[in-house]
Image (tube, rainbow over the protein chains, first blue to last red):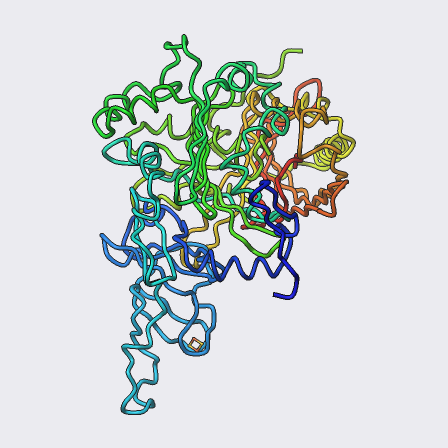
Length: 360
Length: 207
Ligand code: FES
């Protein structure tokens, strides 16, 4: 490293140099040591429900195709042709029977295997075509529909990587037998800020809320946000796990039993009790807002803002460079919920936290 | 002043986002734009065209001058205001759009109140300097007297003062206008942006 980073982090006093939030060298090291070794969130299984469905995402700084290759499996393939490296798939999403390179037409199966170069007979006799498939991420796992991948072939299993935060993710993403589903493709926007700003904001910066989000809290006739800051704020807990994940839980103030479960539909409540254990049910029952981050760059929030429905949202802070990120944001609801409820959750979720959200 | 009331529902289904049924196979294609067949409708005469043009220019000027409450008064009570971006899909697939803004009168009022008061907005404090160009206006008679369907192109330059960021938005707007004795009102606005990823920290201005 060219710069002398000694002293950028003072663990004793809890200080970090602002250099860490702009340096391109730090960014390169983060890609190498964090993003190429950690489990990275790529998307949700309900975005690619049918065989051949795919979305194009990023694993670290490498573009990848996330494709459902069989009804029960998802592959993550480097979006780069094995011939001369052309970008294979140039759409954001689609459904296909195979991937055909736009440069010279090499064709791949949806599991990444090379089907034909079109000129196979011109290759040397000892050519091993079976080794010329698209480069797969060695580790792909799904946790209640949340698809993660990791470039490191020696990675610990996803469940171990998530550790104790899994208990919370389960409460949000597996609280009914059908699980959650994505309600629309993600909003995407670029912002000139380091990805860590987003991750940190969701893992442990509840203090910004009354100031940064003064607009929605002042204009919210239902006063739920102000009440959240003032009354319920006394019942907040901060959770940090050994693996570096964390979340903040804000409970409804005691004495507000009539608001339990907030806006969750009646019909879903028995399903929560069926799918979760009693501690998880109790948490959901009393929860006003939960906001957290899975290391390094996946955040989630379930909150009620204003008079609308509580919405569950995932944010991904994709690092584009040391000073820029692309934000992706998805809204979720229970599969079993009725369409009217899902539509309201989607509208309300994006009204508050989308690419044009009033909380921004 | 009593307005003409909401337009009949058959107008509301035109030129707006239609939510496709959320089946397993088409979760990603769920929101699609149905383009109205504008060509099948009679174009307005010169006098009406000029009146519509003047209205759209005046309305654009209100937004650039930050007279948001005056602008809001030009909307009907059942306004549907939407801004969409594109999910890039292969040519043979159906184009899909996502609503990044989807407001009714109530939620739009909240947005307008917020940007009217710099103290209530992080994104618009200090306020963005905006300059918009509205052009390529086409106008058609709706199925009922006093209802017009228009398309126009918009190019909006938004300079976030206090930072080096600028937002540039290009899109086609599809409006439904209603005329009563007070003039025109906007009953529907859909802004279809020619973008998949917004290159702006947040879309905090009105289009
Ligand atoms: S680079 Fe893909 S076929 Fe040549």
